[in-house]
Length: 270
Image 1 (cartoon, helix red, strand yellow):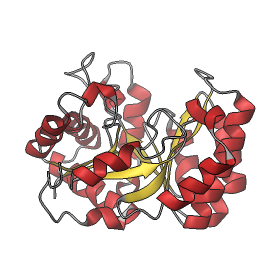
Image 2 (image 1 turned 120 degrees about the vertical axis):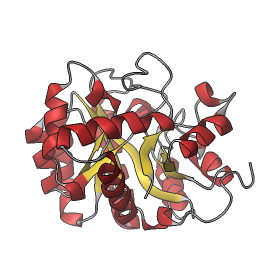
Image 3 (image 1 turned 90 degrees about the vertical axis):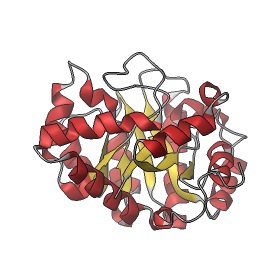
């Protein structure tokens, strides 16, 4: 079973010139599927990832309003998200959440839009992908009030907390997705998380084009580089690389059953 990049941003301008080659390199590296996150530049365009997923069979999509863009959301945005969640290549809602590092949107607006999107996901029965930065307390408070009781799954993307935050997340049914930051010299706390997360809750991602892992740090990240993250996670867990591939791909399939379909030519319709 090949590897899955559970979080990448393939729609952005940094991939405009060579997107197909990027996807091709991922496939050559053994990355069989990629989840392209539908944040784009925010509302009103909510279909950024869908356009990519429709062109490339190994790519699947989410839709959602990133906390940076929360101020752009309207009631029409939430109605459109409800409709787009029925698209055959859309498997979840995200990335959504809170970002108190940049505060590109006011915090009260971020919280309101987060709650509204959780309501959309609950109604649709859709998994969610969470972005949280310097906002753990409010993120947990909102999830515990508006999500945990739904019994639906989700992902803590590009996990940046410690073991305590990981355990609290998993108590609510979340998977922990490890990005290339785990390879950085000062990321010992994250390596500890990578060692203790149970097999059934583990995912890996690139968050490309951001946060390229060692030995590519400082370069544009791309889905093929998730191999380096998976190798680092395997080393921390004391297991073969192939085990991390198998476990994380199986978890991805359970979260997103529609994305288990790998039929068709990779570049059909491109």
